[in-house]
Amino acid sequence: MTSIVVAILVFVALGALFGVGFYLNQKTPKPKGCENLTADCEGCRITTCPHHPHSTEGEKENA
Amino acid sequence: MELLSMAIAAILINNVVLTQFLGICPFLGVSKNSKSAVGMGLAVIFVIFGASLLTFALYKLVLVPFNIEYMQLISFILVIAAFVQFTEMFIKKYSASLYKSLGIYLPLITTNCVVLFVAQDNITQGYNLIETMVNSISVPAGFMLVLFLFSCLRERLDSADTTASWRGNPVALVVAALMALAFSGLAGIV
Image 1 (tube, rainbow over the protein chains, first blue to last red):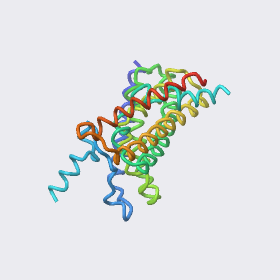
Image 2: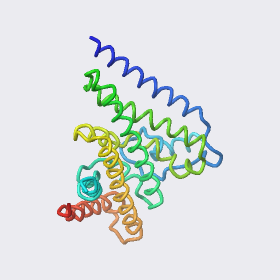
Image 3: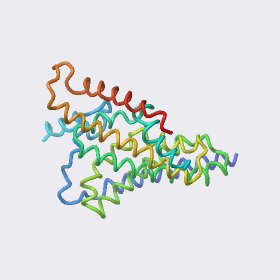
């Protein structure tokens, strides 16, 4: 029983750690001159990746 | 001596890209030029080393004492994802030059399965702390070596007279296969 409680606590704690890290990372501004850096990535099959050419093409179209 | 053999084996013989086919996404995606390849390689070394130490500590100090080893996979994924977020934030805040050279690759590393592989491998192989540290530097060093060599080859391929249907990824994959064959010739050195 204790191990199940600890397992849930570990999961919640790590999930919260990631959530806080993600939030703080998004909040932290990029340094000057680094706002439009691109990874020069040709693109793999992970189309949700922000560096995938499809995403950047979409951004250009929206702009 | 054993640690040296382990490092050489991880870099050259059991290379994570060419023998285990892990990390193929950045291997093909960020090998267009050698500068990007070196930046990606350095970022991967840093993240794998840090994430492996954290996951090793979590496993030994929390998961084993409470008999919740079955949480290994999910907890390692969360640790790696959180570590990447905090590293990116720290670099953004305190080192603009480092962010310029490495920061852009950090989000890509979260999806790099090599990171999770090394963290899991350290546990399944039963490595101690020193062995974990050596393995966690050697495996990404092998990744960086292959990525850099491949990027140099791709730069040459761009200027080569390749048939239209082979241009880009098809010929790159053939080159990767030839590299895997070449690396398999090093199998007897350790």
